[in-house]
Image (cartoon, rainbow, N blue to C red; front, side, top):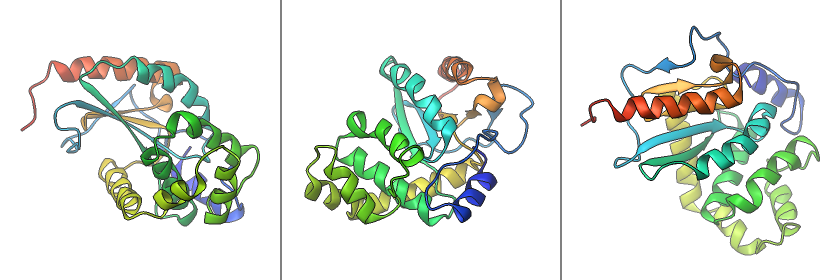
Length: 214
């Protein structure tokens, strides 16, 4: 989903859902983009793969069931990271806050996929604290512990870091995959979500053959 389209929808809707849109704003000239200079990564001892996403994006929702088994098959030298897109928007920031609360609570397997359904189908206001509290209570989760994580300094720090990372990569649409700070790829470049994952595998192999960064 393109950033401009997503933010236009947010101005008109109380929840993050809308029609399909191109994954990236500009047409790609190939199946990936090379980043020069490369973006520094946080996973210093491993190859880092980032998925940039947000919960209101229908493309991210369609991508997620393909992504999950692929992540589980990644070799030990690869670190997979999700980074929610914020783009300076308050509702996206609150959904990103929800994702990081899910992550630090160890509930990604249990809750991550359900958030797409709650936001896009059920129109649950998960961009509000009250909406999150009510929804979490229905998921069999310790509400107090979860909301403590949601409002924690650690999650707030993660939000700031997510915005910094997305800006460093100049992300304009989601879902977009970044490979070790060197490459970007997405379905708008490769033609499909399946082809995107194959391209990430290829780019990981290429990265392994390149000199280590200092």
